[in-house]
Image 1 (cartoon, rainbow, N blue to C red):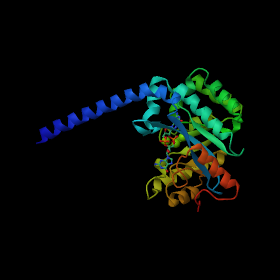
Image 2: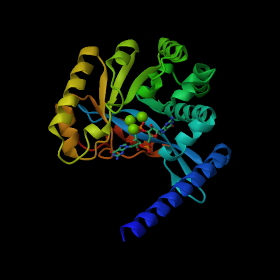
Image 3: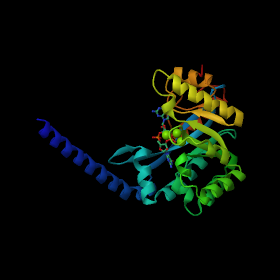
Image 4: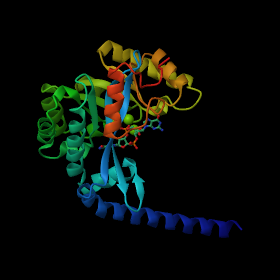
Length: 284
Ligand code: C2E
Ligand code: MG
Ligand code: MG
Ligand code: MG
């Protein structure tokens, strides 16, 4: 029995691997055309001030509405875009769209854009960002770039000069998914991050673990000392909002407040907020 079962499982495994590979190939072929065909769009998820409940930032998150495959998540096609180099074109397009949307918002609201390491290391990366800002008429201080620690794995000169060049002009940087990689304090010391985003694995689960809670507290304490905002990602329940706020996080993001929404809805949330209509759910 064991033998038959074992063989069956092996075959199933092979088939699913082949399916994955086929799907990746398809995605690769279609991704370049997808921008032209208007299949991609940028959604915006609010990042909320945990004291006031007001929206401070919208994070731009790319979506692909594929005519056959349906809605594709970035985790499915961003890695393919990276492998094939399409990420440079795609990344520039995303920054352009995000900057255009943000130019319509009140001036104290910023937009956060995720950058892949490959995008940053490509020639002319900084110029691409400045061009997007200029064309949209958005002041550099209203753009935040989210990077992960994987960017620093090979400490390239290109990375350093990219960050320096942009931050000298007022663009801000956030360290994304903190806690999942090396969580090196060296990067925080070396680069001018204004924000640290604590990965949602530290806030997830109904019972906010004692250990995770202690880690968030420590990161929040460091943030306060270094004058950085600490964002708690993946807040789904009010209990989590209360916990991370008490732990000292200054900002929060997650389904509790809102999922990522199309640009017209993001603008509407801000209009209502400005008119005194509270749009975000209570922070506690
Ligand atoms: P990220 O930058 O850490 O973005 C946060 C992800 O968490 C988003 O997933 C968001 O929809 C999801 N999220 C937000 N709140 C909650 C919550 O309460 N619960 C749960 N379970 N999830 C929540 P999304 O949009 O699927 O993006 C996944 C990742 O793909 C992003 O992680 C980012 O690394 C990458 N990505 C997304 N858009 C872009 C982009 O425009 N460019 C690049 N280079 N990467 C992108
Ligand atoms: Mg992000
Ligand atoms: Mg993140
Ligand atoms: Mg993430």
